[in-house]
Length: 124
Image 1 (cartoon, rainbow, N blue to C red):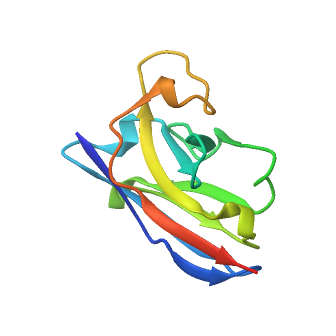
Image 2: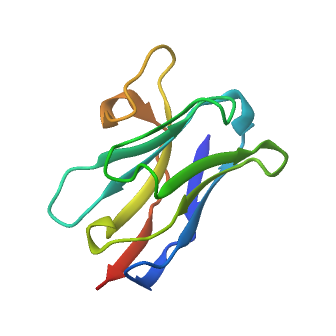
Image 3: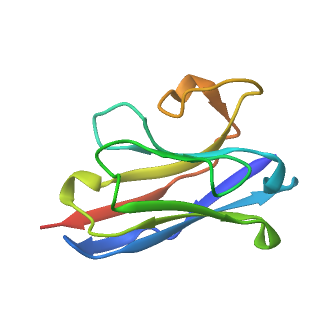
C-alpha cells in the first residue's frame, strides 16, 4: 500500500497548482484521504481531508476558500486544487490515509501509508 503525491512546482503568489495523490496496490475509493504539508523547520500539518465521497471534506481555516480536495475513483486519484497561492503555502505536501476508525484531519499521528511528498514553492 503506497501513495504518491505529485504536481508540485514553483509559482508566483496568486497562481494555482493541482496536486495529485495516486495509489499503488489498493483502491483509493475505499479510503478517506488527507493532505498534509511540512514547511522548513516546522512540523507536518494537516491541510485537507476527503471522505469516501466528495461531500465529506474538511479544510483548515488558512486554506478554506482557496483549496479544493476531490477524488476521481476511476483514476484512483485524489486531487488538491490550490488557488490563490501564498508564500506561506510553501511546503512539501504529502498525502496519506487515516488509521481505521475516527480520526482528526489535523493530526499526523492519525494517518499512515505516507508516500514521498511533492514540493510547492510560492514566491511573492
